[in-house]
Image (cartoon, rainbow, N blue to C red; front, side, top):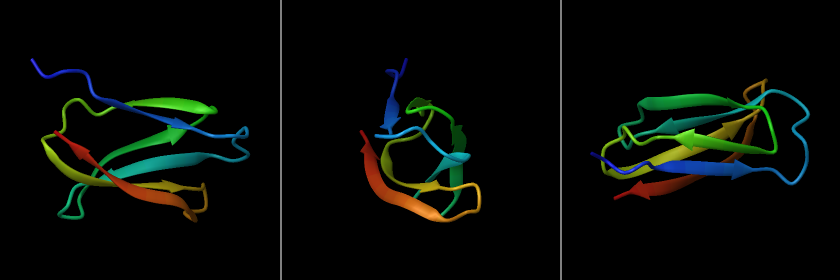
Length: 73
């Protein structure tokens, strides 16, 4: 059984519009998408394989707010 693996995204202010997070594998395939609707959102990605992933936080109008990468070991 794989351990529970999640991210916690937090915002210093209340979100003013519908923002969401997308997670991509290194092949550029979107593997996860979820709306961020509070100042703190937990994302369960325990079903993902080990590897390096990219994330993007986007506004409702698809404007890039933030991006980065993380490793699942």
